[in-house]
Image (cartoon, rainbow, N blue to C red; front, top):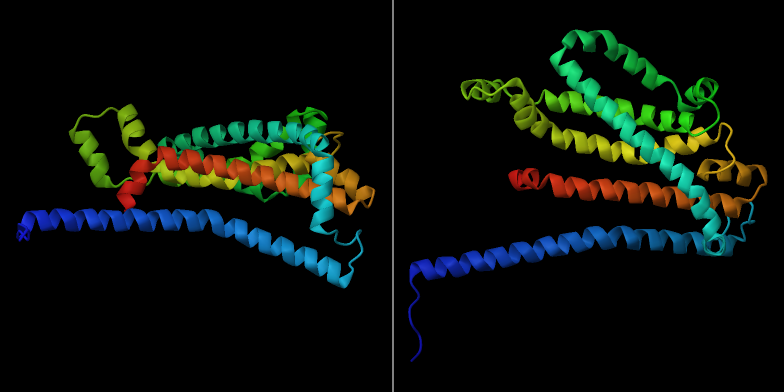
Amino acid sequence: MSDIAQSPSQAAFESDDQAADLFRARARRLTMRRRVLPVVTILVLVLIWEAGVRYFEVPNFIAPAPSAVFATLWSRFPMFMENLAPTALQALAGYVIGNLAAVAVATTFVYRPTAEEAFFPLAVMMNTVPTVAKAPILVLLLGNGMEPKVAIAALICFFPTLVNMTRGLRAVSSQQLELMRILSASEREVFTKLRLKNAMPYLFAALKITAPSAVIGSIVAEWIGSTRGIGALIIEATYNYDSVLLYATIIVGATFSAAFFGVVSLFERHFLKWNDRANQ
């Protein structure tokens, strides 16, 4: 007879372990589903696209088959990478400059409300001007080099981060501020340990929005006079009615945008672990 009655505490521990195992298994299934489902969806859409083009015998200049597009991607891969490099560099430079400027201006707005009253309407007006209208002006001001492309990418990143960061820095309660005052915290400590920490989820939300936008800004800026880059390649393919090259170039630009978004998401997951735990 080996049956020994378990104590209530042992039963509770085993029950907790089983619940933790179930929770981890469920989390793994959710993670796997989030990773696999988009890949499966894209594969199904590509297969439908390939079958549709072949079945309806769609001309190549209207909608090329994915097999032809991927064959071009493979055979001209060095050429695509050579053109992606300047686009990526401009997007990254504009992304950093635009977001840093937005954080600095948002901080100024929080501590100097008069500055917000004076300059926020101007920021709204600047954001309403289409990128294709701003690009020629910046080319006239900054020349036809890399500078106007970086400026366009920075301007696209600026406004979303400004709005999100201003809201995040103000997302502190009066009780939290009062507690910091009771603890004799300096204004610098209030900013770094309370306002900035509370604003991080807002900041990363803006950084994820602006990551693909910076790439789009860089590509659009290249349409206004550029001999290299994804934007220049799109213009060349359009003028030559080379739809296969056009689709392949768009896929390269979109893949880089998605990768950029993914890298920012990984940084968010790493830096906001405390926020995830708080939300559980």
